[in-house]
Length: 119
Image (cartoon, rainbow, N blue to C red; front, top):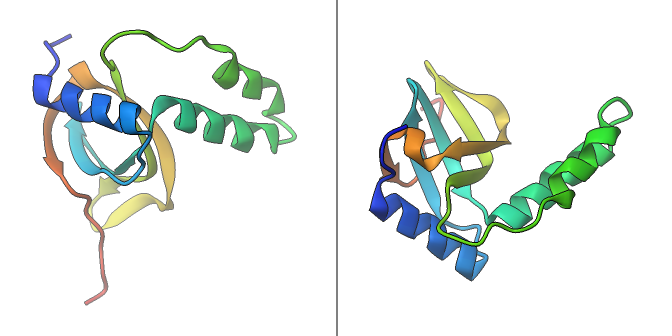
C-alpha cells in the first residue's frame, strides 16, 4: 500500500471532526473513478446499518456496522455516500451508493463530483 496523501488525510480528518457530509470528492482507485460526497465514518456506518436492517435477507449484518469501536487516529478510509462509480457515460448506481475507500489506495483525486446530463 502506498503512503497516503497527507492532504487527503487532512480533508478526511476535517470531515470526521466537523461531522460534515457536504465535501464532494472524486477519486481514482485501482482504475475505478468514484465520485460523490464524503461522510464521517460514524454517519456512514449508521446509514449502511439502517439499509441492511431493512433487508429481509441481509438484516443479520446490520450489527457489524454499529458494533465497532471508533478508531482513534488519523483517518484511513474515505466514506462516500450518494456516490457513483463512473463507467462510460453513466454513474453506477444512478441514485448513488455507499463506498468505503482506503486512502492509501487513492492514486488521484480532485475536489468536486461529476454528474452527467443529457445536454
